[in-house]
Length: 172
Image (cartoon, rainbow, N blue to C red; front, side):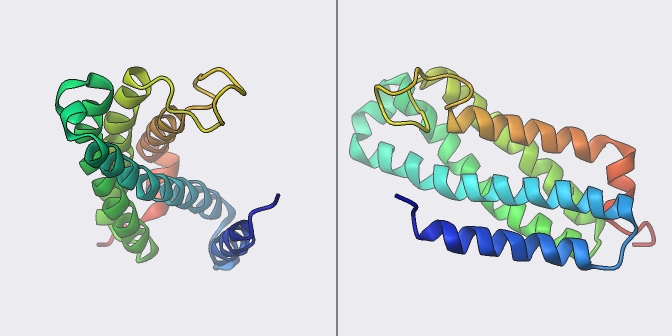
């Protein structure tokens, strides 16, 4: 069945993209903003989902969170996901104001996501996006691997002068 929440999600996403693309900017700036803002939104949304997941696993079995490496890694990752959520929201806000601090916050969001997500993928290979017994866990079904990869992609985009030069005003 089609989840009703998807309707709200897609309408909000279309409105978000429309606000970016309808603003008066040259084509290169629109492309830069579209890619960076979309990745920031994806990272923030994933971090908003992965942080409570870490808390839930830790609280479910506190002993395992101390002794079992597959659960203990979430003690490291959970707080990092919370930081990514906060930083990505602030980065969107500051980049919308065309402030250089938004670029730094976006860079930190991508770095922290990669640092937090990849270790979980390798220590918890069964943390998958698909139901058990349907597909084998892989980089294509792992929420953590995809989040880490998106963090790396964001960092790479932000370091490319084409993107960096179009995200904030130099006069700041």
